[in-house]
Image 1 (tube, rainbow, N blue to C red):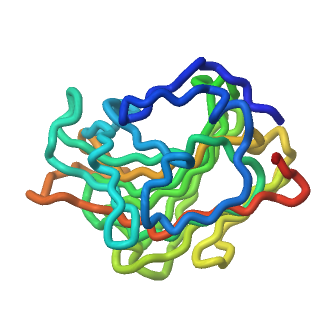
Image 2: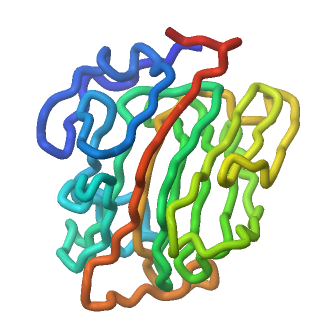
Length: 250
């Protein structure tokens, strides 16, 4: 399935132009990235905006760093745009389809923060809204929240008891995605399955997005965020994608 190019160019956080035909006109294949350095050909650091009113921070490229052998996504008290805080998002340039996704990360325990991994495409790219998301809320880092959106219809509310504290060490989180089903994995063990007709599941290739952000307001979902007086940092040790052999895009 081809991705439809909706923009002529994109400006990265560094202000460098990325032509549409370099990231929208063809899909990405299998890869494994140990996240020890910034691979600008694969990733883009978000900068100068946020994803909605549920956030009390804006994405800042300075909050996406590679140090001590891993990716560090941070929340700081540096103002970002009109928001009080800055936070970090790293997104792939290319779009990835059916296959196996794995992210090794260490989450953050603190009220009002979320460590998440998303696979997304939607109207900004000329596509239906399809998304798969895994998130660890800082209020309880022993739980993993799972959701997906298929052609704009959301399926949320699945919470997995991890059996460990995701803020105390690095673990593997991911999903195996096929046209007729999704299996979410933790440390390479299945924790949740969804089977459905292809039209009732995400089916569009999407961008892989790593995020760490703070919430606005006081909600039962994340609780109120209070800055602790120092930066909070989620760590990503590696990211990999193994393309479904039956659905090769390259």
